[in-house]
Length: 267
Figure 1 (tube, rainbow, N blue to C red):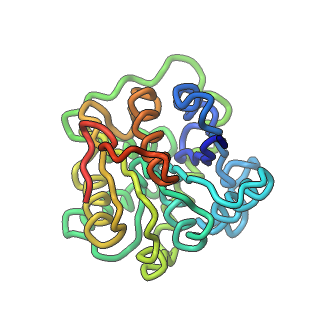
Figure 2 (cartoon, helix red, strand yellow; figure 1 turned 90 degrees about the vertical axis):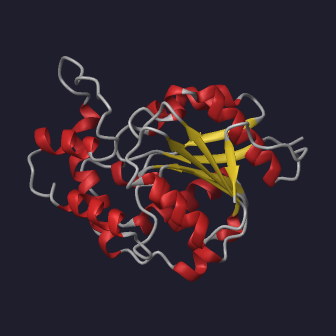
Figure 3 (cartoon, one colour; figure 1 turned 180 degrees about the vertical axis):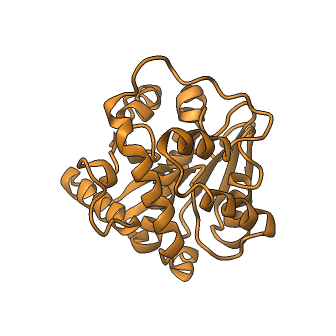
């Protein structure tokens, strides 16, 4: 039996190998999972003209290099937004989609609370890096979440690229045309992992909107003790791996029809 094939896109902070090492180990030998670094960070500077389409083309090149005609795609945060863009443009290449709190999911049908929350991100523009990153992180978790202090010592070298990379994501979210009609045509299974401690006006809103407007085969799994910067792929890789395997097996017709897990919800 051929292994399940999946490409995993990270968010705008951790490199792909650091983000997904534990999850790939938990997925086991039956899953051929490739943690793909964002095109955004392939060089020292943000690529000229970079948009979500740059990431879409990068996924295509990766899949073609692997010889994968079809595959499963998973994306977290900024990588989740790129995964949605890929699904809109190349749905024929995907067997399923998995979204781990995508940072953005189109510019339509926003609730007043979500629009107000998004304005707060725009107000971060212009802050120096030492102020930008803490404020950026705090906006994505519940107000009562206590975040750990920054680790002592100098930051890792890759961290120097992150403020510019995050701002590039925020810019493309302002003007990227995520084709609503093409996204609505995606009928493959969609899995969404949501942290119970993430900001309620952010990722919970995105999950509800995607379930309401799109995706006839939509499954939501809530991880009560997790948030966007303590996500299940790092904090609970075994539980997430079990849910993903069942999601992928179901998409490939290998599943016995049982629920994804006791904590899952489906539309």
